[in-house]
Amino acid sequence: MLHVQGLTGGYGKEPIVKNVSFDVQPGEILGILGPNGSGKSTLLKMISGILPKQAGSVEIADKPAGNYSPKAFARNVAVLPQMHAHAFSHTVRATVELGRYPYQTGLFSSWSAEDEAAVNHAMERTGVARYANTLIESLSGGEQQRVFVAQALAQQAPLLLLDEPTNHLDIAYQQQLLDTVRSLAVDEGKTVVSVFHDVNLAALYCDRLLLMEHGEIAKIGLPQDVVREPIIQSVYNAAVKTQAHPELPKPQMTLLPAMNGKTRESYIVDETQFTVTPDSVLFQAPQSLKTVSSAVHNPGTGWYTTFVNRHVDATYDCDDVKTEMEDYLEKRGHHLTDTVGMMTAVQTLHAEIESFADEGVSIVIAVTAGVGNAVDVSKARERDIRVGTINTWIIVNGRLSDEAFIQAMITATEAKTRALQTENVLDPLTGTQATGTSTDSLLVAATQTGKELPYAGPITPLGKLIGTGVYECTIRAIKTYKEAKGWKD
Image (tube, rainbow, N blue to C red; front, side, top):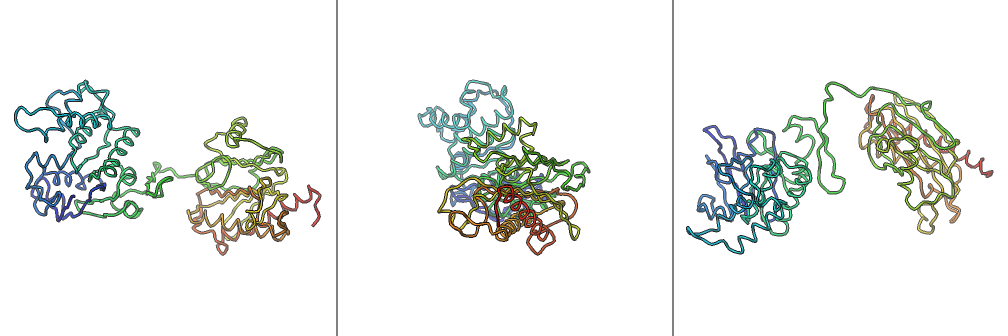
């Protein structure tokens, strides 16, 4: 639909856009990104013919853009500029109706049913129908922006050129507008080229991204190929972290602020900071720890200061465990968004908590272990038993990479399984070697201060401590459990 080749030009003799080439196909959304002054809006204006080109070409539907008459061009290309000047006062409906100008012929052309339907549809899709008879200058900036988007949609052109269409919109209307644009591309096969200021929005909604720097293409490709830390940091000169969107296979970017010179205070966690009662094992950190866990409350990844391993009766049965756990935590004064919560049927007074240190690395391990209903994971399909828990906490004094968090969980699981083997814990149903229980939970947390710890495999200093610590604490916890139950080896 759109073919741009070697486009060069701008406002004066010195070109702002330099040798830019790309193609966009029907049904595709191309997002244009770049820092202020990189030439994003200038490029869009040159494609739309608002600014002249010094070199290169623009083809729309296999025809040079300059060969279209103004009305024919407007029937093929709808343009949403970044700013709008209002020379006359119009109602919202009258403003949107201007989008039908390319379809009017003669001095006394009649307003058709198709024109009416296009305007009404555009106003409904952008949520401005309720303002139909309102003067546009009385609307807020965000509301005005949606009116001009409706005007562009009413134009019903196969190519949409949008310059920061979400400007002035709150997040709900940003989502609504971009969902609409996305549906126009997917359902109606429209071609969309849009300038974005927000990298994350562009990555979410666009099929490809064009990143500009000093008027040239720095990178063009799929969002996951463009929104990468080295590229974004270099082009924007900003410290960022990229990660996957939690629900979609799209990259997202997080700024890493300098915090006005402030840094996280360094501190060391040890076993003396844990409080053990018949009700729970409790650890409250002086500042948030980066955490990965399979906890009941706040599982997954986050930053937390309070860690609770709660004792429940072996007959505990609840239809809504998460809500009941929230009630428990709130009644004890724990802030829900700052707390990770686990459950165990094991007596928490039997928890094994110990600090381990070597080679400049230190950790704390806390384990509660009940193995009355241990499970051989390879035989798990043969049973349906839920009671019994080995809960393991690993608190690391250091700065873990994402890779280290995952490796720490693998190392800890291997150490736990080895402890079960040493203690000859068997699956009571199959008589085979147990590997855990059906409701085991694992937590790895790090202070994210002090020493960099990029890896936690079993041959690394951190991995060695985790392997040794989890193994020893799990052995002792199992022995304590057996003694409490009167079991004999």
